[in-house]
Length: 153
Image (cartoon, rainbow, N blue to C red):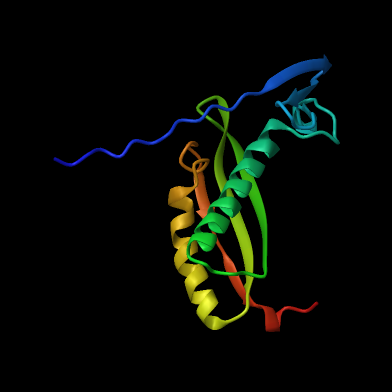
């Protein structure tokens, strides 16, 4: 009789306090507060994180951390990881939503063999990133792999 694998569940909490106008502070236990607000295009102020940016940042971070976890599991040492991400907010059927997020990581490695291993790992990142699995936006992952010997210091 096969036993079904049981997975743990996790809870994450967040608090939010409105300050003024279209601005507030978000916090979580043991972490610094983050000022958040509407972006300027929605009558907010520049200089604070907007929810739209936080969603894109969460996906970008999740992709990186998924890659790092898989690389560590495969004992792949990489020299650097840097990533840019951009989300597209559009009005769809009268409601704004993030419809696409493009993530462009650059991974620096020491050998061609490491690049091949990193490509294999990266092929599984999008399907295993829990943020990409949690949103309806089209997620596009376009990684670049470079050799450390080719990267200017």
